[in-house]
Length: 183
Image 1 (tube, rainbow, N blue to C red):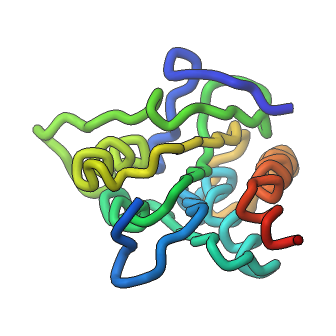
Image 2 (image 1 turned 90 degrees about the vertical axis):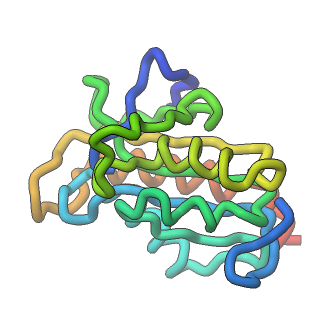
């Protein structure tokens, strides 16, 4: 089950158009997986991107292993018509719960005082990319957050987070960019 939600209910984990990046072609869909692979369920975003990559994606889909990159991800959004961001969250809901949030509801510029690279999260990246790309910022951004149950350093995804990951994979595979390739 995927919960529709907004900023008031979910805070992201602290782990955290026209001109494509580096001359790469424009794309129909960019999937950005964020999180820390070294902290169990927090690695759900990069694990999802790696799984999609291993299965193969159609032309027109760009995969971005955002890890904990922060501002560097902003340039990867250029040229995308639609963006999906996937990360873990910690809200107190049942582990593996999936939240779907419109990107505009969670864009948040960090305070400039005391800003450190590792504290620049994907929600900051969305706000930064909107500012940096201006009219070239993708019009359609969706964020999927999977509730983390285990953030133990060095552990793999918990069964609950893996189930949430599979739910999000199913939703992504139903995206138009994937359906068009099946024809």
